[in-house]
Length: 260
Image (cartoon, rainbow, N blue to C red):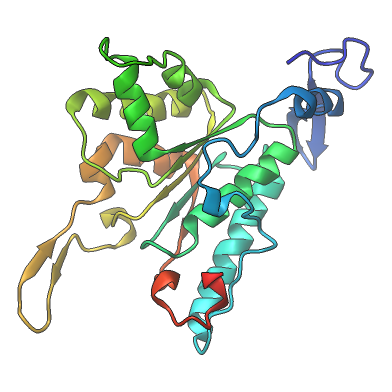
């Protein structure tokens, strides 16, 4: 996407230097973002339809009769919003949201994505299962369509959103490809926004749960089991971590505003 070669702010590079206190960084110039909006494909491409209108403004923290959950959700909202507002000054440069299903992780990830797109950064969204399927197809000669650009996009985009990270256990080949994506982004200091439903021993989760009535044990895979301890270590270092330790809003009463 060409910038204006006569722009006095970026001198045609598409990037302008910005200063915040003692920190110096670069962000997209207005001339670049204007051209980008005029020609880019749908910025919500890949985002599930249910979340395409997700924003910080319509994320509800109200939980009927439960002030503790309100505090947790509002804390998560504030942290995610601060990350998006501070980017690219944010350190670490990524965002990681972890918690049970239905707690608002994807909503906050998409809200952050939209904010970064508004600031002119290239953001690519992948549902984890979709990414894995596209990786498999890209190396499958029998596939009707072979997507050769998927790994390049996942590795080299300015910001990568990976939703539902580790959702399925995969073959060693795909496992290595995902680990390679995370390692490349870590080495190149490229931002990653990721969500996961999986428990994490690193955050105090117990992979083995015992039913208090029957006494039976339920052994759950952790994120490290699905993507490897090395990749998890990279994510911890490169991302601001937000834990949404609240109930699944889909199972709450119909009066819960977060169902809407």
